[in-house]
Image 1 (cartoon, rainbow, N blue to C red):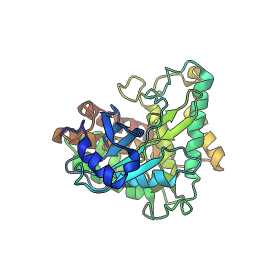
Image 2: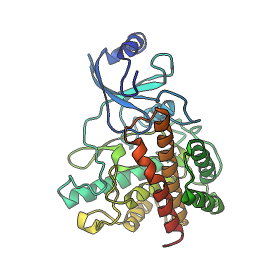
Image 3: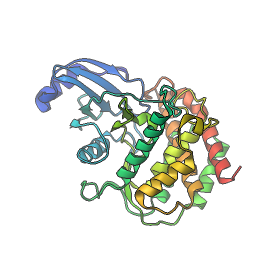
Image 4: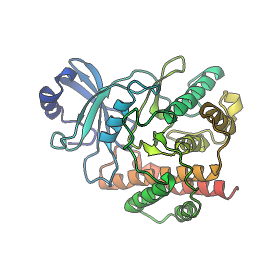
Length: 341
């Protein structure tokens, strides 16, 4: 069966014995987004739900961890961070060939364009960005122990471990040598900041198109927690700022590069970071170029993994190969930041 289809008969048989409150699936449709874990809208006799599954085939170590995703969303159910309700996790890979979970279908709007061109009002744009900033600060202020997530990550220098992890992931999916990536890997290894002791629950992919908004700019739900872990809060902040630096003419998830933010009512990076720091009681952030460079590197490594899976026939997006052309330019952008070009 194709990655774009679900064996609903097998799932219905499983749900009947293990989670019959979800009802019987009468229709399923794959969402167009989601490069990593295929995601489907389910119509059942009890309503509409969303199913997230691991892709079939051989997977990189620790990748596509839908069970971790389910756990963290469940832990955040009553927190200040908006998430969908989760209903069931199936660890039995014999049902459809991989783990999956079922959660609430949250209705609202998802925006792929960082400039929010579909939003007519600058004040609404400003409020949307401010709400993202608030949710990020709320996430990083979560009491990890109270949420039952104190074992959700490893101790020690987060960025040291992350550079090692994503270098290994990149090497495992490397299809061609990228000189800029080699330079970036060297820079990151030589400039890892000293561990400052900060530990928070981090989303890992905190960006505009992983959020569902109401018409009045409120965030109804944060999606795609696959990369969440216990880590350094600046990783999330830099990752979002990295996305906003991307060119505005990208075909998928364009950034704000080259645009006048003031004309759009969107805060510049300095203002956005300052507002986050104010909310969390932080004076300033040292080593900001490193955190940005790391974010570019990790995104490039993630994209390279998508390209590799596309070559093997396991990628969740038909556009996976097009993404491959971004790996080198992303590393180039990072090196320009650290070289202050």
